[in-house]
Length: 252
Image 1 (cartoon, rainbow, N blue to C red):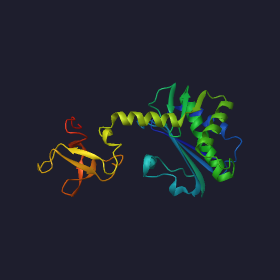
Image 2: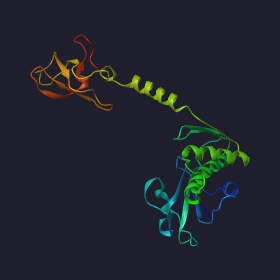
Image 3: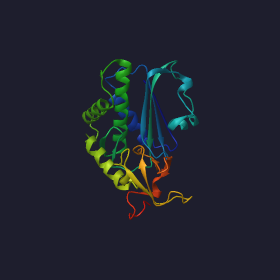
Image 4: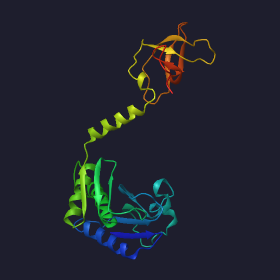
């Protein structure tokens, strides 16, 4: 394994601890084809990792000018890179405080005592992907399996990390409830084809104070409703100018 650490602020002690964590967690894995690039940065705002382990990388693709890793082009290219390799990139944000708790995109909640604990779990998660796709280990395990394995490995190695998978259904229901409460057009969501709405405003004054029929239910992000006026014409009418009944306050 080749390990390279870059930083726009050189915390020497942290670099030693990061190297120790990566070598410790990869000790039982054949990493002869692996390159790990760690970027310890101020101003990045985010700690993240990516494993490029399905296809071979080469020295020309070690750095990139695209995506969230575009900053890597500003750091030097190592002169001892293998001709081909699998790559793990880790970005460590220095402007975050610890202890900290955060939730990842896979609905896991993690608690880290220190930045080194965070790095350890992040690397172990990406190492799981390397082991699965390059070494044929962990068959049929995806992101959930990677989190479970990483947490177990880090705990066994003595890192102070707590993690649990959250109830995804409960989170989804809570989000839907919040979204519904903030939805200015929620009164129109139940309407079906043939239902009636009241036109409160028409800049041309042709259809003001008239009823119209719904042509189809509104889409999730729509601000207009497809309606048919009394003369048979079909319109995409702004819902802010519609109501359900004549004496109802218009939607604002």
